[in-house]
Length: 393
Image 1 (cartoon, rainbow, N blue to C red):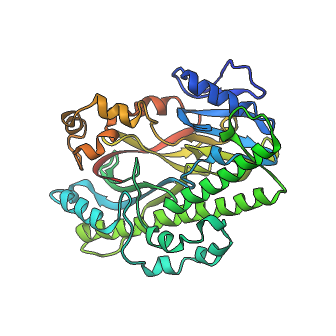
Image 2: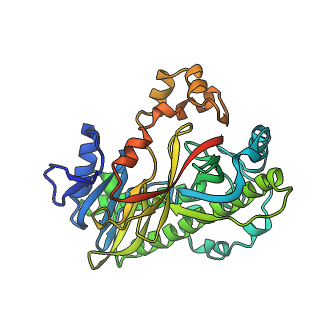
């Protein structure tokens, strides 16, 4: 479908891949970001764009010599991991319920943590630099160790899926847990404090930023990179446990080699080169999609998900959407739908079907097929997946 330039009066253009009208609050948020003087070239909005804090979820912002912590968000390094295994769907017959129970027993969800710290987590190299992180998290190393290898809540999930050829895939969605959130909050607080001291007139205080070359910038960038590596490793630790569970049921516990592995962030920032200039690219609810990149775009519980390969579209700063995007808030979903609706919409999927996950009902999300149609110039689909087991955070 491609993008269209949004007819807003802003310092930098806004390019949108969305086919829906933005709400007045979303328009204001997009305009605020595009008015920042250090934004590079334009702001890109993905097909699943929706309201966030400071910056829209589903936005890609490139900046020169400055970075906005709120444009990354609080779940630093949140993203997806998926592996394709050499098993067929019929091998799962009669085993789905027990697989779900085993996943729930092995991987803590919600606010839960691991009761013990496994060896791979103890030996993680990131602990050596924990003492260099913001002083506001120095009392949280023990918690961070126990949360490494845990899912978290909200829309985080673990799924067993099948592709069009009935091949088994394992997929999960999680980030940097409490430590990433706390680091983000600490630095966002510092940025707001500096903005107040400077008396700079920002369109939104949540867009307070750090300037390259300052101690505050360097501290945030260091902590951001640490949390992103933590999030990546968190997904690896969970996926290793998840894989062992499935191998126990399908291969008698014998280790198997994945046919394809993907692990990608969708809430993060990196230094990249675009339009022949080095810039800081912040993706808040967006996945990097260079020609060499594989990505994961999940639908809602009960909808399709997609393994994709990027097309390297520079208008999007080589990015694509990170999912379907919410159509309604969690509170509205609970008011709108009943438990019977949830049961009907998740028919055929081994998952929780109680009021605790009603806010994650598929109808609360945008139709994933439309989201994919809107970005056929950003990615090509490698595999289309459907869930058969879903564990929600």
